Figure 1 (cartoon, rainbow, N blue to C red):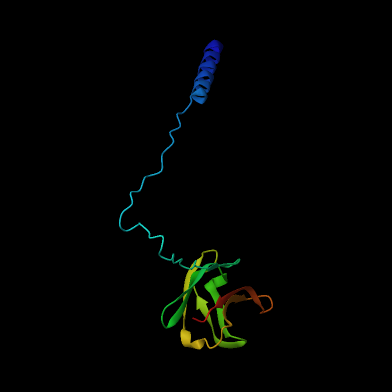
Figure 2: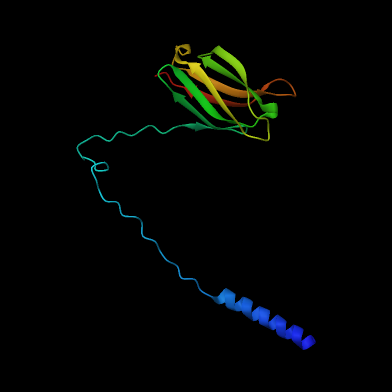
Length: 153
């Protein structure tokens, strides 16, 4: 019986070694070739127009915060991970607060989506900024503040 167990163990070990020693053939794929057509040809005499990169803001409790503009409004979207899903925001025009409120989203530990929209006519200076923040349960101070500059266009 003991000889059978030893024989079986040797058989399993040799099968394992054989499996480990097998070499796999590596196939290198060539990148796809694109044929030039009328849509992707460029004229070297034409100026290249680079789209501005989208700026994304984040901190410990806010992430993927992006500012987009339409003809008459400013839209701020992102995700927040805040206690009971509530955070505050304040829009500053220079040092003056022009709009202040709170926002309800999904509560932590979930990342809740948010979208805040402002009218562009609230902006009268070039030093406009948006603050996203949470009031501390300990002492009521602003914590986890995320400042986002808003440019006047």
